[in-house]
Length: 84
Image 1 (tube, rainbow, N blue to C red):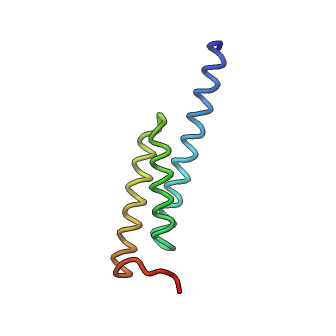
Image 2 (image 1 turned 90 degrees about the vertical axis):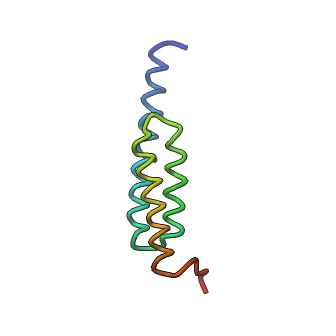
Image 3 (image 1 turned 180 degrees about the vertical axis):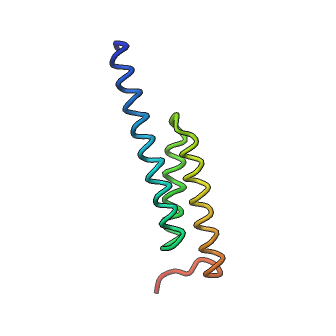
Protein backbone atom coordinates (compact mmCIF):
# COMPACT_ATOMS: atom_id res chain seq x y z
CA UNK A 1 0.00 0.00 0.00
CA UNK A 2 1.42 3.36 -0.96
CA UNK A 3 1.95 6.26 1.41
CA UNK A 4 -0.60 8.39 -0.45
CA UNK A 5 -3.28 5.71 -0.03
CA UNK A 6 -2.55 5.50 3.70
CA UNK A 7 -2.88 9.28 4.06
CA UNK A 8 -6.21 9.27 2.23
CA UNK A 9 -7.55 6.46 4.42
CA UNK A 10 -6.37 8.20 7.59
CA UNK A 11 -8.06 11.42 6.48
CA UNK A 12 -11.26 9.56 5.68
CA UNK A 13 -11.25 7.84 9.08
CA UNK A 14 -10.67 11.18 10.79
CA UNK A 15 -13.54 12.78 8.87
CA UNK A 16 -15.90 9.93 9.70
CA UNK A 17 -14.89 10.13 13.37
CA UNK A 18 -15.44 13.88 13.38
CA UNK A 19 -18.94 13.42 11.98
CA UNK A 20 -19.91 10.64 14.40
CA UNK A 21 -18.62 12.75 17.30
CA UNK A 22 -20.60 15.83 16.27
CA UNK A 23 -23.72 13.80 15.55
CA UNK A 24 -23.39 12.26 19.03
CA UNK A 25 -23.14 15.70 20.61
CA UNK A 26 -26.13 17.02 18.64
CA UNK A 27 -28.21 13.96 19.55
CA UNK A 28 -27.26 14.38 23.23
CA UNK A 29 -28.28 18.05 23.24
CA UNK A 30 -31.62 17.19 21.63
CA UNK A 31 -31.93 14.42 24.23
CA UNK A 32 -31.79 17.03 26.99
CA UNK A 33 -35.23 18.20 25.83
CA UNK A 34 -36.88 15.23 24.11
CA UNK A 35 -36.68 11.45 24.68
CA UNK A 36 -33.64 11.57 26.99
CA UNK A 37 -33.32 7.81 27.43
CA UNK A 38 -33.25 6.95 23.74
CA UNK A 39 -31.28 9.93 22.49
CA UNK A 40 -28.91 9.94 25.47
CA UNK A 41 -28.20 6.25 24.93
CA UNK A 42 -27.64 6.88 21.23
CA UNK A 43 -25.18 9.67 22.05
CA UNK A 44 -23.28 7.38 24.40
CA UNK A 45 -23.06 4.65 21.75
CA UNK A 46 -21.86 7.13 19.11
CA UNK A 47 -19.30 8.44 21.59
CA UNK A 48 -18.00 4.95 22.26
CA UNK A 49 -17.70 4.31 18.53
CA UNK A 50 -15.81 7.59 18.13
CA UNK A 51 -13.42 6.64 20.97
CA UNK A 52 -11.70 4.24 18.56
CA UNK A 53 -10.48 7.17 16.47
CA UNK A 54 -8.18 10.16 16.91
CA UNK A 55 -11.18 12.37 17.84
CA UNK A 56 -11.24 11.41 21.51
CA UNK A 57 -12.32 14.84 22.79
CA UNK A 58 -15.50 14.78 20.71
CA UNK A 59 -16.10 11.22 21.85
CA UNK A 60 -15.89 12.11 25.54
CA UNK A 61 -18.15 15.14 25.08
CA UNK A 62 -20.73 12.95 23.38
CA UNK A 63 -20.55 10.32 26.13
CA UNK A 64 -20.76 12.84 28.98
CA UNK A 65 -23.64 14.80 27.41
CA UNK A 66 -25.49 11.53 26.74
CA UNK A 67 -25.10 10.49 30.37
CA UNK A 68 -26.28 13.93 31.51
CA UNK A 69 -29.36 13.63 29.25
CA UNK A 70 -30.16 10.23 30.74
CA UNK A 71 -29.62 11.59 34.26
CA UNK A 72 -31.93 14.53 33.62
CA UNK A 73 -34.51 12.09 32.27
CA UNK A 74 -34.33 10.05 35.48
CA UNK A 75 -34.57 13.20 37.59
CA UNK A 76 -37.66 14.60 35.86
CA UNK A 77 -39.56 11.35 35.32
CA UNK A 78 -38.58 9.55 38.52
CA UNK A 79 -37.12 6.65 36.59
CA UNK A 80 -37.68 4.91 33.30
CA UNK A 81 -41.32 5.04 32.24
CA UNK A 82 -42.12 2.78 29.29
CA UNK A 83 -44.45 4.20 26.66
CA UNK A 84 -48.14 3.35 27.03
